[in-house]
Image (cartoon, rainbow, N blue to C red; front, side):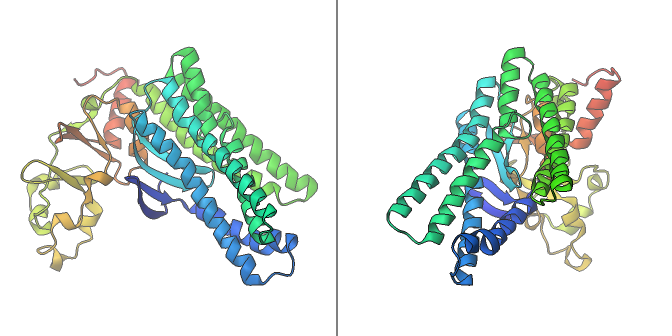
Length: 379
Protein backbone atom coordinates (compact mmCIF):
# COMPACT_ATOMS: atom_id res chain seq x y z
CA UNK A 1 0.00 0.00 0.00
CA UNK A 2 1.47 3.35 -1.07
CA UNK A 3 1.43 6.30 1.32
CA UNK A 4 -0.58 9.40 0.46
CA UNK A 5 1.56 11.60 2.72
CA UNK A 6 5.20 10.95 3.63
CA UNK A 7 6.05 11.86 7.23
CA UNK A 8 9.78 11.16 7.15
CA UNK A 9 11.86 8.46 8.85
CA UNK A 10 11.67 6.85 12.25
CA UNK A 11 14.43 4.48 13.36
CA UNK A 12 15.65 4.47 9.76
CA UNK A 13 12.27 3.37 8.36
CA UNK A 14 10.18 5.52 6.01
CA UNK A 15 6.83 6.40 7.57
CA UNK A 16 3.77 7.49 5.60
CA UNK A 17 0.03 7.91 6.02
CA UNK A 18 -2.61 6.56 3.64
CA UNK A 19 -5.60 8.78 2.92
CA UNK A 20 -7.89 6.37 4.78
CA UNK A 21 -6.00 6.98 8.05
CA UNK A 22 -6.21 10.74 7.49
CA UNK A 23 -9.95 10.40 6.89
CA UNK A 24 -10.39 8.43 10.10
CA UNK A 25 -8.38 11.02 12.05
CA UNK A 26 -10.61 13.81 10.72
CA UNK A 27 -13.75 11.85 11.61
CA UNK A 28 -12.38 11.15 15.09
CA UNK A 29 -11.76 14.85 15.73
CA UNK A 30 -15.18 15.76 14.32
CA UNK A 31 -17.21 13.18 16.25
CA UNK A 32 -15.44 13.91 19.53
CA UNK A 33 -15.61 17.71 19.22
CA UNK A 34 -19.21 17.78 18.00
CA UNK A 35 -20.58 14.72 19.75
CA UNK A 36 -18.99 12.83 22.63
CA UNK A 37 -17.20 15.68 24.40
CA UNK A 38 -20.15 18.18 24.46
CA UNK A 39 -22.55 15.38 25.43
CA UNK A 40 -20.40 14.12 28.31
CA UNK A 41 -19.23 17.54 29.54
CA UNK A 42 -21.64 20.29 28.43
CA UNK A 43 -20.93 23.94 29.01
CA UNK A 44 -17.30 23.97 28.00
CA UNK A 45 -16.00 26.42 25.34
CA UNK A 46 -16.05 25.19 21.73
CA UNK A 47 -12.29 25.72 21.36
CA UNK A 48 -11.78 23.28 24.24
CA UNK A 49 -13.81 20.59 22.49
CA UNK A 50 -12.02 21.11 19.18
CA UNK A 51 -8.57 21.40 20.75
CA UNK A 52 -8.88 18.14 22.65
CA UNK A 53 -10.55 16.53 19.64
CA UNK A 54 -7.54 17.32 17.46
CA UNK A 55 -5.09 16.20 20.15
CA UNK A 56 -6.99 12.93 20.56
CA UNK A 57 -6.99 12.34 16.79
CA UNK A 58 -3.23 12.95 16.73
CA UNK A 59 -2.69 10.54 19.63
CA UNK A 60 -4.79 8.00 17.76
CA UNK A 61 -2.33 8.18 14.84
CA UNK A 62 0.57 7.89 17.30
CA UNK A 63 -1.06 4.74 18.70
CA UNK A 64 -1.23 3.28 15.18
CA UNK A 65 2.42 4.18 14.64
CA UNK A 66 3.46 2.54 17.92
CA UNK A 67 1.60 -0.61 16.84
CA UNK A 68 3.48 -0.75 13.53
CA UNK A 69 6.88 0.17 14.95
CA UNK A 70 6.56 -2.80 17.30
CA UNK A 71 6.32 -4.98 14.18
CA UNK A 72 9.40 -3.23 12.78
CA UNK A 73 11.54 -3.78 15.88
CA UNK A 74 10.67 -7.46 16.23
CA UNK A 75 11.14 -8.03 12.48
CA UNK A 76 14.62 -6.48 12.61
CA UNK A 77 15.58 -8.57 15.63
CA UNK A 78 14.44 -11.62 13.69
CA UNK A 79 16.65 -10.74 10.73
CA UNK A 80 13.87 -9.42 8.48
CA UNK A 81 14.50 -5.93 7.05
CA UNK A 82 11.66 -3.41 6.79
CA UNK A 83 11.32 -0.96 3.91
CA UNK A 84 8.56 1.32 5.16
CA UNK A 85 5.46 1.71 7.32
CA UNK A 86 2.13 3.09 6.12
CA UNK A 87 -0.70 3.95 8.48
CA UNK A 88 -4.14 3.24 7.06
CA UNK A 89 -7.75 2.63 8.04
CA UNK A 90 -7.30 -0.80 9.60
CA UNK A 91 -4.19 0.14 11.55
CA UNK A 92 -1.09 0.02 9.42
CA UNK A 93 1.11 -1.99 7.13
CA UNK A 94 4.83 -2.61 7.55
CA UNK A 95 6.39 -3.62 4.22
CA UNK A 96 8.95 -6.30 4.95
CA UNK A 97 11.94 -6.86 2.67
CA UNK A 98 11.67 -10.63 2.50
CA UNK A 99 9.65 -13.05 4.57
CA UNK A 100 10.00 -14.90 7.83
CA UNK A 101 11.83 -18.19 7.38
CA UNK A 102 10.10 -19.96 10.27
CA UNK A 103 6.53 -20.01 11.67
CA UNK A 104 7.77 -18.93 15.11
CA UNK A 105 9.35 -15.82 13.59
CA UNK A 106 6.12 -15.08 11.75
CA UNK A 107 4.20 -15.47 15.00
CA UNK A 108 6.47 -13.07 16.88
CA UNK A 109 6.32 -10.37 14.23
CA UNK A 110 2.54 -10.61 13.90
CA UNK A 111 1.65 -11.01 17.56
CA UNK A 112 3.59 -8.04 18.90
CA UNK A 113 1.24 -5.54 17.19
CA UNK A 114 -1.99 -6.39 19.06
CA UNK A 115 0.07 -6.85 22.23
CA UNK A 116 1.43 -3.31 21.89
CA UNK A 117 -2.08 -1.90 21.42
CA UNK A 118 -3.27 -3.86 24.45
CA UNK A 119 -0.41 -2.47 26.55
CA UNK A 120 -1.32 1.03 25.35
CA UNK A 121 -4.96 0.41 26.35
CA UNK A 122 -3.90 -0.64 29.86
CA UNK A 123 -1.59 2.39 30.11
CA UNK A 124 -4.29 4.86 29.09
CA UNK A 125 -6.82 3.16 31.39
CA UNK A 126 -4.48 3.53 34.35
CA UNK A 127 -3.71 7.13 33.39
CA UNK A 128 -7.41 8.00 33.17
CA UNK A 129 -8.07 6.45 36.59
CA UNK A 130 -5.09 8.32 38.08
CA UNK A 131 -6.29 11.61 36.58
CA UNK A 132 -9.79 11.05 37.95
CA UNK A 133 -8.38 10.48 41.45
CA UNK A 134 -6.45 13.75 41.17
CA UNK A 135 -9.66 15.55 40.06
CA UNK A 136 -8.24 16.45 36.65
CA UNK A 137 -10.52 18.30 34.21
CA UNK A 138 -13.30 16.04 32.97
CA UNK A 139 -12.54 16.69 29.30
CA UNK A 140 -8.94 15.57 29.72
CA UNK A 141 -10.07 12.38 31.49
CA UNK A 142 -12.59 11.77 28.70
CA UNK A 143 -9.84 12.15 26.09
CA UNK A 144 -7.55 9.62 27.78
CA UNK A 145 -10.47 7.23 28.37
CA UNK A 146 -11.31 7.31 24.67
CA UNK A 147 -7.69 6.52 23.79
CA UNK A 148 -7.82 3.55 26.17
CA UNK A 149 -10.99 2.27 24.53
CA UNK A 150 -9.77 2.72 20.93
CA UNK A 151 -6.49 0.94 21.65
CA UNK A 152 -8.42 -1.97 23.13
CA UNK A 153 -10.56 -2.03 19.97
CA UNK A 154 -7.40 -1.95 17.81
CA UNK A 155 -5.88 -4.83 19.77
CA UNK A 156 -9.07 -6.90 19.54
CA UNK A 157 -9.83 -6.20 15.90
CA UNK A 158 -6.28 -6.77 14.69
CA UNK A 159 -6.16 -10.05 16.59
CA UNK A 160 -9.01 -11.49 14.52
CA UNK A 161 -7.69 -14.56 12.62
CA UNK A 162 -8.07 -13.16 9.11
CA UNK A 163 -5.64 -11.64 6.61
CA UNK A 164 -4.44 -8.91 6.24
CA UNK A 165 -4.88 -8.36 9.98
CA UNK A 166 -2.21 -9.37 12.48
CA UNK A 167 -4.43 -12.22 13.59
CA UNK A 168 -4.36 -13.44 10.00
CA UNK A 169 -0.56 -13.57 10.19
CA UNK A 170 -0.85 -15.53 13.44
CA UNK A 171 -3.27 -17.92 11.73
CA UNK A 172 -0.85 -18.26 8.83
CA UNK A 173 1.99 -19.05 11.23
CA UNK A 174 -0.14 -21.73 12.92
CA UNK A 175 -1.21 -23.32 9.63
CA UNK A 176 2.37 -23.13 8.37
CA UNK A 177 3.65 -24.87 11.51
CA UNK A 178 0.93 -27.49 11.30
CA UNK A 179 1.14 -28.27 7.59
CA UNK A 180 4.67 -27.20 6.69
CA UNK A 181 3.52 -25.28 3.60
CA UNK A 182 3.78 -21.49 3.87
CA UNK A 183 1.87 -20.73 0.67
CA UNK A 184 -1.01 -23.03 1.56
CA UNK A 185 -1.13 -21.46 5.02
CA UNK A 186 -1.28 -18.01 3.42
CA UNK A 187 -4.21 -19.13 1.26
CA UNK A 188 -6.06 -20.19 4.40
CA UNK A 189 -5.50 -16.79 6.04
CA UNK A 190 -6.64 -15.01 2.86
CA UNK A 191 -9.84 -17.10 2.73
CA UNK A 192 -10.57 -16.20 6.36
CA UNK A 193 -10.02 -12.52 5.59
CA UNK A 194 -12.40 -12.68 2.65
CA UNK A 195 -15.13 -14.27 4.80
CA UNK A 196 -14.65 -11.67 7.55
CA UNK A 197 -14.80 -8.79 5.07
CA UNK A 198 -18.02 -9.98 3.47
CA UNK A 199 -19.54 -10.67 6.90
CA UNK A 200 -18.81 -7.12 8.08
CA UNK A 201 -20.01 -5.62 4.81
CA UNK A 202 -23.31 -7.49 4.73
CA UNK A 203 -24.11 -7.21 8.43
CA UNK A 204 -23.28 -3.51 8.36
CA UNK A 205 -25.69 -2.80 5.52
CA UNK A 206 -28.30 -5.07 7.10
CA UNK A 207 -28.01 -3.11 10.34
CA UNK A 208 -28.62 0.16 8.50
CA UNK A 209 -31.59 -1.20 6.54
CA UNK A 210 -33.30 -2.98 9.45
CA UNK A 211 -32.66 -0.57 12.31
CA UNK A 212 -31.97 2.69 10.52
CA UNK A 213 -28.86 3.24 12.68
CA UNK A 214 -26.07 4.69 10.55
CA UNK A 215 -23.35 3.26 12.77
CA UNK A 216 -23.64 0.09 10.68
CA UNK A 217 -21.99 2.00 7.84
CA UNK A 218 -18.71 1.86 9.78
CA UNK A 219 -18.82 -1.92 9.76
CA UNK A 220 -19.72 -1.95 6.05
CA UNK A 221 -16.92 0.48 5.21
CA UNK A 222 -14.32 -1.52 7.15
CA UNK A 223 -15.57 -4.71 5.50
CA UNK A 224 -15.22 -3.15 2.05
CA UNK A 225 -11.63 -2.07 2.70
CA UNK A 226 -10.87 -5.48 4.18
CA UNK A 227 -12.15 -7.21 1.04
CA UNK A 228 -10.06 -4.92 -1.18
CA UNK A 229 -6.92 -5.50 0.89
CA UNK A 230 -7.32 -9.27 1.10
CA UNK A 231 -8.05 -9.50 -2.62
CA UNK A 232 -4.73 -7.79 -3.37
CA UNK A 233 -2.97 -10.09 -0.92
CA UNK A 234 -4.65 -13.08 -2.52
CA UNK A 235 -3.15 -12.18 -5.89
CA UNK A 236 0.29 -12.02 -4.32
CA UNK A 237 -0.20 -15.40 -2.64
CA UNK A 238 -1.30 -16.90 -5.95
CA UNK A 239 1.88 -15.64 -7.62
CA UNK A 240 4.00 -16.95 -4.76
CA UNK A 241 2.43 -20.38 -5.17
CA UNK A 242 3.36 -20.46 -8.85
CA UNK A 243 6.89 -19.15 -8.35
CA UNK A 244 7.79 -21.59 -5.60
CA UNK A 245 11.60 -21.72 -5.14
CA UNK A 246 12.50 -19.66 -8.22
CA UNK A 247 15.36 -17.31 -7.35
CA UNK A 248 15.95 -13.71 -8.35
CA UNK A 249 18.93 -14.80 -10.46
CA UNK A 250 16.60 -16.82 -12.70
CA UNK A 251 14.34 -13.90 -13.58
CA UNK A 252 16.55 -10.81 -13.41
CA UNK A 253 17.81 -8.83 -16.36
CA UNK A 254 21.62 -9.09 -15.99
CA UNK A 255 24.02 -6.25 -16.75
CA UNK A 256 21.34 -3.58 -17.17
CA UNK A 257 21.86 -0.19 -18.74
CA UNK A 258 23.15 2.22 -16.09
CA UNK A 259 23.94 5.91 -15.90
CA UNK A 260 26.39 7.92 -13.80
CA UNK A 261 24.83 10.48 -11.43
CA UNK A 262 27.06 13.20 -12.87
CA UNK A 263 25.87 12.75 -16.48
CA UNK A 264 23.49 15.39 -17.85
CA UNK A 265 20.03 14.42 -19.04
CA UNK A 266 20.95 15.51 -22.56
CA UNK A 267 24.04 13.32 -22.59
CA UNK A 268 22.12 10.33 -21.30
CA UNK A 269 19.20 10.65 -23.72
CA UNK A 270 21.64 10.77 -26.59
CA UNK A 271 22.98 7.30 -25.86
CA UNK A 272 21.72 4.40 -27.95
CA UNK A 273 21.20 1.86 -25.11
CA UNK A 274 18.54 4.01 -23.45
CA UNK A 275 16.45 3.97 -26.62
CA UNK A 276 16.30 0.19 -26.35
CA UNK A 277 15.76 0.18 -22.59
CA UNK A 278 12.46 -1.43 -21.60
CA UNK A 279 12.18 -0.64 -17.88
CA UNK A 280 10.49 2.27 -16.14
CA UNK A 281 13.65 3.39 -14.36
CA UNK A 282 17.42 3.33 -14.83
CA UNK A 283 19.96 2.42 -12.11
CA UNK A 284 22.41 5.19 -11.27
CA UNK A 285 25.92 3.85 -10.63
CA UNK A 286 28.94 5.96 -9.71
CA UNK A 287 32.28 5.67 -11.51
CA UNK A 288 33.69 3.52 -8.68
CA UNK A 289 30.85 1.01 -9.13
CA UNK A 290 28.87 2.06 -6.06
CA UNK A 291 25.09 2.00 -6.58
CA UNK A 292 23.72 5.51 -6.04
CA UNK A 293 20.01 5.09 -6.75
CA UNK A 294 17.30 4.74 -9.35
CA UNK A 295 16.14 7.29 -11.92
CA UNK A 296 12.47 7.05 -12.95
CA UNK A 297 11.96 7.51 -16.69
CA UNK A 298 9.06 9.90 -16.13
CA UNK A 299 11.34 12.29 -14.22
CA UNK A 300 13.77 12.33 -17.15
CA UNK A 301 10.99 12.95 -19.65
CA UNK A 302 9.63 15.89 -17.65
CA UNK A 303 12.87 17.86 -17.82
CA UNK A 304 12.32 20.76 -20.28
CA UNK A 305 14.35 20.67 -23.50
CA UNK A 306 16.18 23.88 -22.64
CA UNK A 307 17.27 22.50 -19.27
CA UNK A 308 18.49 19.05 -20.29
CA UNK A 309 22.04 20.20 -20.84
CA UNK A 310 22.25 21.54 -17.27
CA UNK A 311 20.24 19.06 -15.16
CA UNK A 312 22.27 16.04 -14.05
CA UNK A 313 20.91 12.56 -13.32
CA UNK A 314 21.82 12.87 -9.64
CA UNK A 315 19.19 15.60 -9.28
CA UNK A 316 16.45 13.25 -10.49
CA UNK A 317 17.30 9.92 -8.89
CA UNK A 318 15.79 8.29 -5.83
CA UNK A 319 18.58 7.29 -3.41
CA UNK A 320 19.32 3.60 -3.05
CA UNK A 321 18.00 3.67 0.54
CA UNK A 322 14.50 4.31 -0.87
CA UNK A 323 14.68 1.64 -3.58
CA UNK A 324 13.74 -2.04 -3.38
CA UNK A 325 16.84 -4.23 -3.47
CA UNK A 326 17.40 -7.98 -3.54
CA UNK A 327 20.21 -10.53 -3.64
CA UNK A 328 20.56 -12.97 -6.57
CA UNK A 329 19.79 -15.99 -4.40
CA UNK A 330 16.67 -14.50 -2.76
CA UNK A 331 13.36 -16.12 -3.62
CA UNK A 332 11.31 -14.17 -6.14
CA UNK A 333 8.16 -15.05 -4.19
CA UNK A 334 9.43 -12.92 -1.29
CA UNK A 335 10.11 -10.02 -3.65
CA UNK A 336 6.60 -9.89 -5.15
CA UNK A 337 4.92 -7.85 -2.34
CA UNK A 338 7.77 -5.31 -2.35
CA UNK A 339 7.59 -4.79 -6.13
CA UNK A 340 3.81 -4.49 -5.95
CA UNK A 341 4.15 -1.52 -3.60
CA UNK A 342 7.17 0.10 -5.30
CA UNK A 343 6.45 3.12 -7.48
CA UNK A 344 8.65 1.93 -10.36
CA UNK A 345 7.88 -1.78 -9.86
CA UNK A 346 11.61 -2.39 -10.22
CA UNK A 347 14.18 -3.87 -7.84
CA UNK A 348 17.96 -3.56 -7.97
CA UNK A 349 19.81 -6.86 -7.63
CA UNK A 350 22.99 -6.39 -5.59
CA UNK A 351 25.79 -8.84 -4.89
CA UNK A 352 28.60 -7.72 -2.65
CA UNK A 353 27.32 -4.16 -2.93
CA UNK A 354 27.61 -4.21 -6.74
CA UNK A 355 24.78 -4.08 -9.23
CA UNK A 356 24.40 -7.37 -11.11
CA UNK A 357 20.89 -6.98 -12.51
CA UNK A 358 17.37 -5.61 -12.16
CA UNK A 359 14.02 -7.30 -11.66
CA UNK A 360 10.72 -5.78 -12.78
CA UNK A 361 7.13 -6.93 -12.47
CA UNK A 362 7.18 -7.76 -16.18
CA UNK A 363 10.21 -10.04 -15.63
CA UNK A 364 8.28 -11.92 -12.97
CA UNK A 365 5.17 -12.11 -15.13
CA UNK A 366 7.20 -13.66 -17.93
CA UNK A 367 8.54 -16.28 -15.53
CA UNK A 368 5.01 -17.01 -14.32
CA UNK A 369 3.93 -17.51 -17.94
CA UNK A 370 6.82 -19.91 -18.51
CA UNK A 371 6.00 -21.89 -15.39
CA UNK A 372 2.31 -22.14 -16.16
CA UNK A 373 3.07 -23.38 -19.71
CA UNK A 374 5.75 -25.85 -18.49
CA UNK A 375 8.52 -23.98 -20.32
CA UNK A 376 12.11 -24.69 -19.20
CA UNK A 377 13.62 -22.34 -16.66
CA UNK A 378 16.52 -20.07 -17.56
CA UNK A 379 19.50 -20.83 -15.32
